[in-house]
Length: 312
Ligand code: NAD
Image 1 (cartoon, rainbow, N blue to C red):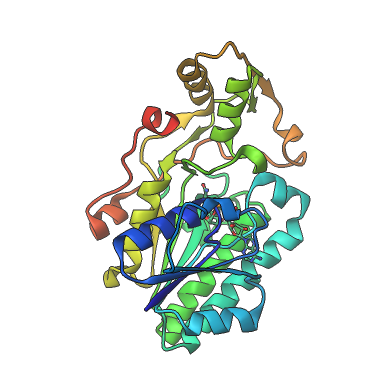
Image 2 (image 1 turned 90 degrees about the vertical axis):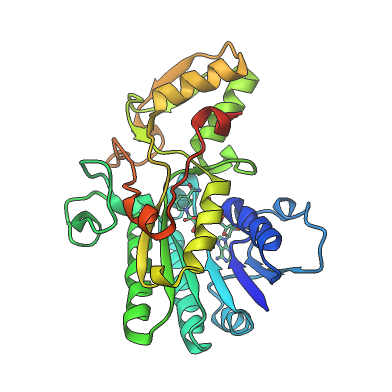
């Protein structure tokens, strides 16, 4: 009995591997190309129940082989991080679309292997008002929600997954992650909490893009992976999309202040225009907050870790 985790050497994927090894008796097979993931994320796991394959999720025959040997699949491999995506937009979209297509095809061909697909709160685009609910027209129906290539690819992945459920009875669940944070996340690809913490510890200014009033819902990775596991093992959730996020948003200015307080740093906060991080035409959404009532109905819970605990 084994579970395949694509992107299992990444930040969320490696925590999911920890969780699956601890909570189940399954073997876990990781498929990862180590582009943003790292072997060090799995180095603490000294077990023969873990196998790591260095390969590309765009490799159709490799994915078909690995999925055919698995009893469940968690598909997390994707090109992620602002820097990666802004520097290689088409390549990133290709990884995210083709990888998901390969996984879904293989899962449907292998006796309908239950499959979790990692999506993102980015699919809601730059839209208002919050909170965002799964059934909102703004994801699939709206042409006004400003979205970038990464988010468009994730929305297309969702369409594809729901199509496989409707047409080929694939037991698939989609989780829209909202700013997942915690140990092993690096600031290297533009993630805000590790970036702020690294800046504060070094005594450098904390760089806030825009005016800093934009809000985000930070969700601890351990909450996210246990919910991910429970969603796939709850048959009622198959064919459904769920927000996976904490319902308490924080502004980026407040986040920066709190990081400075908790680290006891002398750092200051500097505001720089979005254009320094993105191309001229793109602005991040002002607010991002999940409606978690659907998650509550399905699992009886939603992420709860508070920000101070996450930061510490
Ligand atoms: P991550 O970069 O740590 O994980 C992605 C993993 O996929 C990495 O290990 C990377 O090496 C691997 N990968 C990339 N391209 C690959 C390819 N072609 N073949 C095989 N492996 C490949 O990032 P993460 O934050 O852990 O993200 C995991 C998933 O969650 C992604 O699908 C991401 O889009 C989604 N997500 C994350 C967040 C968040 O807040 N961290 C928010 C929304 C969605």
